[in-house]
Amino acid sequence: MHEFGIAEAVLETVERRADGRRVRRARVRAGALLRIAPAALDQAFCLAAAGTVAEGATLDLVIEPTRLICRECGHSALCANPLTICGLCGGIDVDAEGGDSLVLESIQLDPGTAPAR
Image 1 (cartoon, rainbow, N blue to C red):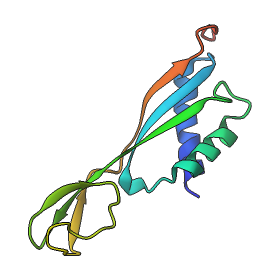
Image 2: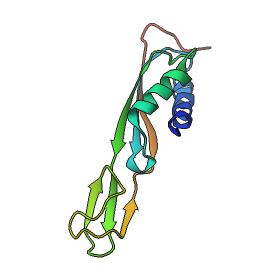
Image 3: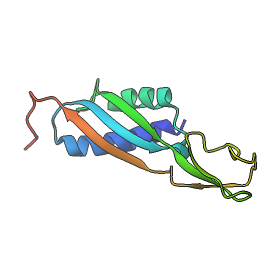
Image 4: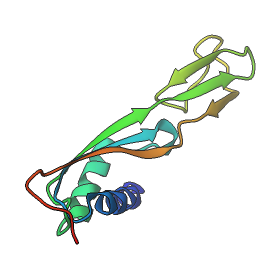
């Protein structure tokens, strides 16, 4: 379950940006090549966030597709499931471009908390 390591990395960044303020929500964009199971990431984030400023926060996950390029026919297409065949010719010799990033896009803070001093 690599989602726990990802959840810990996201939480570390969220805590740094929150600067001691309570976090309500965080939005993460992850590439399809990371093969993240949304339910597993959500559960891992809940466990990792226990006792932190992000305890009880919602984690929104957006999966970013990868571009597959067929070496047989040259067809190129975005794909959320990078382990597929070419949609045009059915070829299995495909290259993947992108889809391996992990970005914390935004966090929503509780307006009633002040930054740590």
